[in-house]
Amino acid sequence: MTAPLVVVGDVLLDVDIVGTSSRLCPDAPVPVVEQAEEHARPGGAGLAALLAAAGGREVVLVTALADDEPGRRLRAMLERHMEVAAFHLHGGTPCKLRIRSGDQSVARLDAGEGQALDGPVGPRVTDAIAGAGAVLVSDYGRGVTRHRAVRSLLAALPRGVPVVWDPHPRGEQPVPGTRLLTPNEEEAARLAAADGADITGFGLSAAGRRGRHLGRSWGIEGVAITLGSEGALLCDGSEAPFLAPAEPARGDACGAGDSFATGTVEALADGASLAGAVTAGVRRASDYVRAGAAAAVAAQLAESGTARLVPERGEDAWDVVERTRRAGGTVVATGGCFDLLHAGHVSMLQQARRLGDCLIVCVNSDASVRRRKGPTRPVTPAADRVRVLEALSDVDAAVVFDDDTPAPLLERLRPDVWVKGADYAGTILPEAETVRAHNGEVVLLPLLEGRSTTRLLSTTKGNAS
Image (spheres, rainbow, N blue to C red):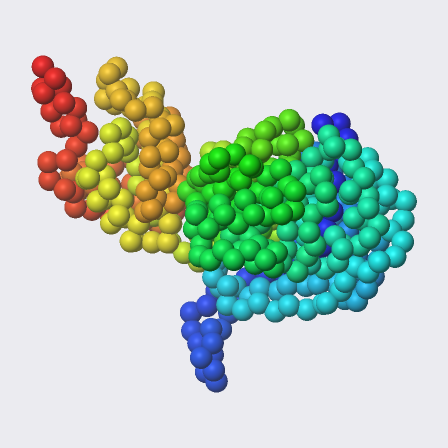
C-alpha cells in the first residue's frame, strides 16, 4: 500500500498512576498506593494510530482536539509519529486516569466531556480521507464519526479502499461500503439490541447470531466479534462463521481491541481476505497483551519518545520478567529439554509457579539436546516444545537457549528462584553460581516417581518391537 493508512476517530488522554501497595489506608478500607509514577499515552483512536505507525506504515490521524493542556499534550505525543489532521473539539479533552498497584487497577477517574460538533473540518482533513489507501474508524462515541463532513468523506471513498469500523455503543452506524465491523462481545450485544434484535446470552452461538444480524441489517460484508481469550468470530455471510483462535497471553488487555482492529486493517490493505485479516488481528492482539499492552506503550514513550508497539516474536519472556519486576513480583525460572511433556514435567511446573508471580521456562535448543542426549534426540523440535509449554496455564513464557548450560541465559534473566527436580540432589549445578551471584536462590522440587522422557521412549520402542 503506497497511500497512507488513515485512522479516523476520537482521541483520549490515558494516564496510569502505577505504584505498589502493601497496606490499607487507616481511615478507610482502601489500598495505599506508594512509590507511584505517572505514565501517559494517547488512547482511543490515538492508540490505534500509534500501533499502526509503529509497524513502519505512513499514518494520518483524523480527529478532533481541544486547545487545552491535555489536548496539547496529546498532539505533541502523536505528531512525533504521524501526521495529525485535527479539527476543533468543543469542551475539555477526554481523560481517563487509572490508579494501579502493579498489574491491578484500583480505581479509574474520568474527566473531560468534549464532543466533536458539526462544522468546518478544513482542507487537511478532507485531503487526508480522500487520499487514504485504507481507513480504520476508531469510534469512541465522542462525535468524530457523527460529524456530517467526516461521514460524507468516508462514504465517498472508492470501493477498493478497505474500511474497518471499530464501533462504540454510543457511536454511529458505519457508513455504506464498510468492509469489516469489529465489536467486542458486549458491544455486539448492545448494538444488536439497539437495532431491534432479540438475541439473549453470550458465547459463540449468541455471537454468531448477533454478527449475522448486524451484517445483514447494516449491509456490511464482515462482522468480526472479538471474544477475549477465545479469539474472534467472523460472520461474513458464509453458512458457518470462521473462528480465529487466540494464542495464550496473560496481562493487562487495555487497548487489545485497538490492536486487533489495527491488525485487520493493515492485513486488508495488503490484500488479505477477511478471514486472513481477522487471523492477523487476533495474532496482533495476543502479541500486544503479551508484550505489556498499553502500560508498555506509556513506558516506551516516557523513556525515548518512541513506541516500539509491535513486539517481536521470541521476546515474550523478557516482557513478562520486566512486567513482573515492575510490579515488585518474584520471577521463577526452570529449565530442561521437555522433549516429550509428561506428568512429571507438569507436576514440577505447577509447583514451581506457586513459588512466585511468573514462571519462565528455559528450553534447550535442538542442537543443545543432541549434544546432551545423542543424535536421535530431540523427538520434538524446539518450536513445538515451546508451543506446548506456553499452552500450560502455569507457564508464563518459554525461551530457547543454545548453550550446554542455561548459565549465559540466566545471567540476563536473573531469576529470583531457579527450580530443578530433586533428581539433581547431590550434584553440582553449573548455573547455580550465576543465579546466586544476582541474589537468586536455587531450589529442588519433588518428582513423580517413574516419569521420564527416556523411560517413555524405551517403553514405546519395546512395545513396537
